[in-house]
Length: 458
Image 1: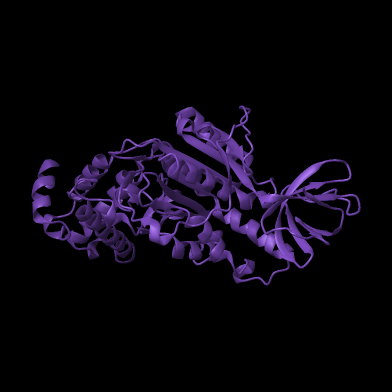
Image 2: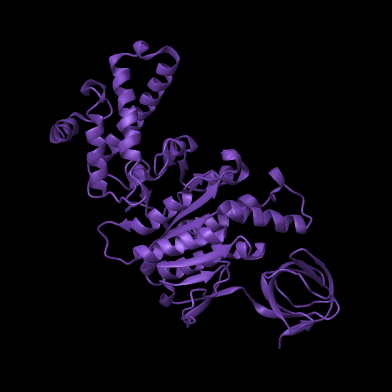
C-alpha cells in the first residue's frame, strides 16, 4: 500500500517539505498531485525524523500547500533498459522524445548506480581511434578511460563531440560499438545540431541520446548523466558492447547542483559550489571502465566549459583529479581558424602509453609522439623569441623548429570536423612534418625508426 500525505508545509524553489512521514527511504521516488489533478514527480532528498525534503522534477509553480497530495512510491528513480534504445532520443528523465514507440524494457534499473569496484577493474589497454590526429597521435584514448575535454564559452566543443561520436571505433575487435550521448542544459539550437548531425551521418544507428534542455528543470539535469550511464552499463556489462559515453556540459550539471544546494541552505564551498562537488563528480566519472571477465567496456569523454577560461575553477580542477588526463581547446588556435583548436601542449592522456605500440597502433608511435610534442614546444618558443628579438636572433635549428610548429598547426591540428584519419595516416603525417627538422635534432626517436620511416617519406 502506497503511503499518501496531505501535510506539505513549505515549498522553496524546487524543494518541498512534507511532515508526519514514516517508513520512507532516501532517493525514493515521489508522486505529487496538485489541486488541479496534475501529477508531478520528485525524489526524497533528505529525511529528518518525520520530515522529508523532496526534490521536484517539474518545478513547484502553481502548487497549493493545502490541497496537494504526496504519494511515496517505495522505489528509486529507474530507467527501463533494452537494446531497442539504440537509435533513439530521450529526455533527461528517460522518456522518448523522438516520436518513436515506447520502449518495452527488458528490466528496470536504479539510475543511482555504484562506481566500479577497484578490485574488479581491468586495466585499460586497447586503443580507440577517434579519427582526430591530435588525440590519436599525441593524447591517445584507451578503452575504459575517462578523458575529459576542457573548453571555454563559445569554443566549438560541440563540433568536437559530434566528430568523436561519428568517427570513434575500436580497432581489431569484432564486438559491437555504441555511443551514449548525454547533454545537460544545452540550448534548443545545440540539441538540434546534435540530432541533425547524428541523423545525417548515420551515427544515430549506433547511438542513444539523452537530452536535457536549458529550459528544463535543474533537477532533471542532475538525473541526465546518471540515466546515460545506466544505459551504458546495461549495454556494456550485460550486452558485451564497447560503449563511448559523451557527457556535455558538466559545467551546467555543477551549476544545477549549486542551485539545489543553495535552496537547501547548505554551507557553500569554493565559489558557492557545495562541499560535496568532488564526491558527486567522482560518482559520475568512476562509473567508466572495464570489469574483469566481462567483454564490454565504458569509455567516458566528459565535456566542460571552463568559466572565464580558468582551468583552476573548481569544476575543471576537481575533474582533473578524478579523470585520466584532459584535452584542452585553445581560444588562440580557434581565433587563428584552426579546426579543431586542440592545444596539445597542456593536453594529456595519462593512459596513452598503455594503448599504443606494436600490435596496437605501430611500433614507432611512442617515439614520434615524444618527438612531435618536444618539437612543437621548441617551435612555439622559437616563434615567441622571434617576435621579441627578430628572426636574425634564431639559429638554423630554431628556424627549423619554428617552421615545424607552423606546419604542425596548419596540417596536423587543422584537419577540420569532417575528416577522419586512420592512425596510420596520422603517424605518416607526423613523419612527413618531422622532415623539416634536421635529423641530428630528432633525438627522441630510435635510429632504426629514423632509418625505416624517414626514408619512406623522402
